[in-house]
Length: 245
Image (cartoon, rainbow, N blue to C red; front, side):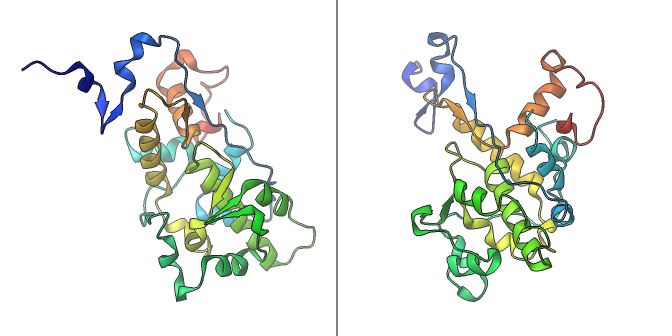
């Protein structure tokens, strides 16, 4: 029996791009550029370094070997050893200690609650986050510095590593991770980011997809590393992590 041409280029019931690529020779996928307006204050740098997210924070200031987790460490400096990151988005409140409501814990950890118009289920408008934590006040005490560090990490995780295509809202699922700043560096953020990038690349294989989300600094750096013809000037000079070039 001959293969049905209508089934050849489908993955899980979704039309795959290879089945229509000859009809769309100039198809272009738009990347989602992640930037935010929160300043990287020197006073929160020690917490970012402790969490293993400092190099990612540096990459946020200027945008610019994918088959192994080790490449994630080389390209964007994320830890690849340690505890795994898991949890369903809809069920994440069950991981909150003591059974406290998520927004009560949000208030305890960040010292402020968003206006009701800025909340949608378990997400907050990024514009509210940027306005509230845009700049750490002079003379801030240690507790305030820790709150700003938590806010900055939540923005990095939601927008830089695990963002969606909209890029307008921040999910508060990261509360269990940023609650104990001393422990956040024990997680394998590099392996998790790589898995998320793979998933995003699978989704963009849908012929109707026009945008690609995920940790695109990693993908861009890998492309420059493996395909020298695409490299910008000066990229042959070694810097670590590789994406910082």
